[in-house]
Image 1 (cartoon, one colour):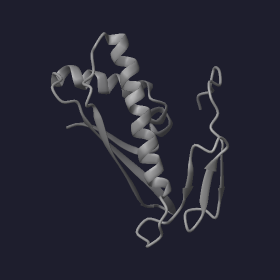
Image 2 (tube, one colour; image 1 turned 90 degrees about the vertical axis):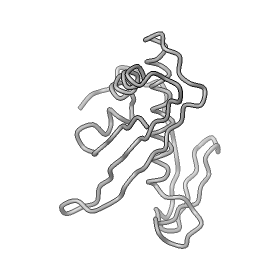
Image 3 (tube, helix red, strand yellow; image 1 turned 135 degrees about the vertical axis):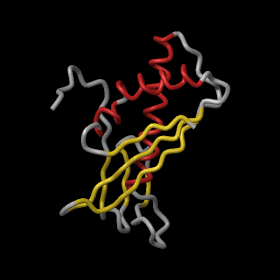
Image 4 (cartoon, helix red, strand yellow; image 1 turned 30 degrees about the horizontal axis):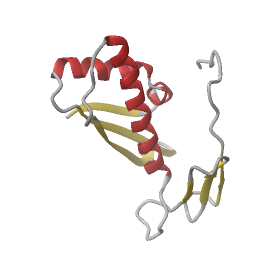
Length: 139
């Protein structure tokens, strides 16, 4: 396990009730959501949707960081459609993730270089590597 060299930020959330009718709120109040299980009639979001939003946002941040170091300009309309699957694994449940990255107008080889570099530095990529099936697709 890799240890942090320095803590740059700590997110804090208080959750009650879990994914089936629960709620989660961050200590600063910026996130305040109702939770529902996937595929139910509940009105809340679910952990997989939150993971998809978090991973894709984090990955864009990693792309911007590596593009700056590579002296590459990213398209203004860069976007990621993230998909997170939930399903059974032996004796438990697991997730899989796909990040479908759109970089309109960018040279495909250069875009792929940015994706490869971002996947090496993104905290979500590093957290999931070796344990979650992650696909990063240039679309």
